[in-house]
Length: 448
Image 1 (cartoon, one colour):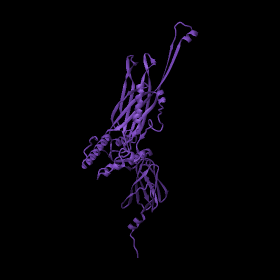
Image 2: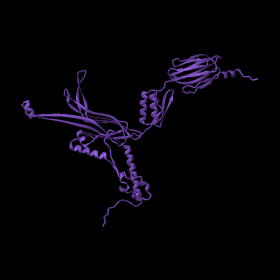
Image 3: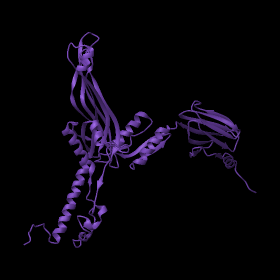
Image 4: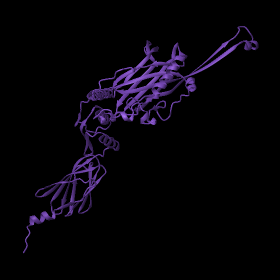
């Protein structure tokens, strides 16, 4: 005859089956003599969880009804609804007199914008990891100054973000040099020369000429001389054979600007070179100040000075792929006596603001800042009537349009130094290869 003790039978009947939650949380279970504790049910706001028991539930108690709500679906199923962020305990009694307790933690779902920004940041940087605990993101890993600055901005916008575990690496900040040239050009001369700014790129069209069309036989280095050094074939074969071209934009357009300056149809307003650390801003001003008197509330007169002239503000940032993103503000202003108020002239201003990403060494062109000046001159004999005066008078009308053109070329000084060192190393390697075969230089001789 099979005998089962009462204690063990009660334990078997009090087994509770919990349905999986929408978020797949795992419950920690503790067994006591008269109760069974199910801990740490984690739910997001607005979600629910259903718990099933083997015995009928007789009574339910909730510590904080504003955090969660417990509702009986039937005598063996209990539904927990998460209302707002917080923590509470839910206790229920079964018909056999035992009780069970569950601890509910409710968190607020993170904003989709924050999740998207952190996901993008995690994908672009392999050194950080984002962990989520109760809907709160924790950023781990090592980042540089630029990435940490972005995290700080996110922290200000989303205080729930935890960046205390982030380590900032001491990295060398890139030093960038921006070569700026500001020209004022007569638009009529531009039209006469047939110069048009292209719509598909930032500046005039570029042209490259090379000898690749002529074939290897017509190159400066013939095909038979490429392996002239025994044992160093790979060294010479790595040289850019046939690429002896030039970029026509740099010389031809510079010559055009020089010609226009000599004709008096264009002038150079400023040619500054600005060096700045990546992520920082630099300003340039060439001009003067106009004093503007102002009356205070106390009746005193104060003088405020307004800048005019050529103003330039640049903020370059070196990206991870080596390109340089530059925010540019260019402005040309000059006094205008035609709109003077109480003897203080106004300002005519041409201003442009843009942000462009270009490769290191490429030139960005800002054009289209047009100014038009009209003048009219009358001459004639004084005291002559209108009829005869018109015949003996002269009227001269002139109209001039000028265009402000700004050329900006960003360069990475560290990258330039690396390229220079690489060229020197390759040059030394080539000289050693020549010296190995007894070639120490070239001599000039004449034939008899």
